[in-house]
Image (cartoon, rainbow, N blue to C red; front, side, top):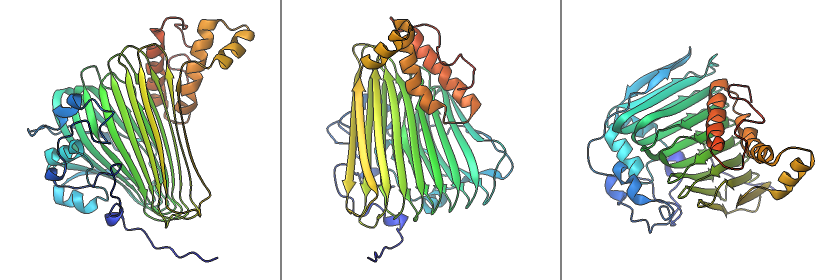
Length: 398
């Protein structure tokens, strides 16, 4: 049987989406009303905490400190140039405020076609108590191979819009670490365009003490693209961490896999993970799977996890999703204790294995070490769990 398809056009990719799950992207601030918390896209969020990023007031421009190896450049472009480059307009008021606040100071990082930098591209943003509006664009040239690391540290309020284009045949690892101090608020939108036959892997790690709400969106520019999205988050008492995923399979023979894992401890710790995969009628012969797992380490936590699949064609290889939230796996604990491992070490071993499976896939020693340290700090304060690492000492390779 012959199937006729057309090349997707990123500029109208969301034209047919008209539902409460898909707010209309728009560059116009007036198209993004202040949320009340009753909207589907905000009903799990503590809206008052993020209003500091929505207020109509001047926001400072962040100072991106970039480590640029050979083959990588950074320039400042205007708002008009940024819109011409973009495939995905803001979908909520936080992202719209980020764009408006950045104005004509948009940072564009370019990786030359066929370049293979010998070191990761590292972009650091350290808050010093300010309220910031950041707009960052990344253009990965065709058949380039690069690792890009975004690190957020210090204390501050950040509304950000990040957009990454991976060109045809490119290989990109995108790592974003939210390592804020207590009192910080970080919200915004991260959009990824996967080129024809490109391979993209994203890693989101929310490990600090600030409140985080990120809308993560991805689509394909042509057939053959592959997208893997990994995430981990540690949520402490009174903290809110939210990751909202949307993968748009708008091209045939594309692949996406999503795997996010979280650990919560302390009264009022709240995590939100929303997964949504849309398989359009043109997206024949695709394969997708999304999963979210949450470990409740103490009483008083709440984890909301909602996977969604929207399928418009039956001509696919496979599509699925799963979600789990709970305490320790008693069978795993019984197995370990029956091998002579003390219960406090067994509990820690279960949690470390849960996260090190993902951390070990990153392949960037500095990032892996920081994540292991954050995990160790998270676990060291929990009663009934070993205070020392079992699988990996701080600083050891994962």
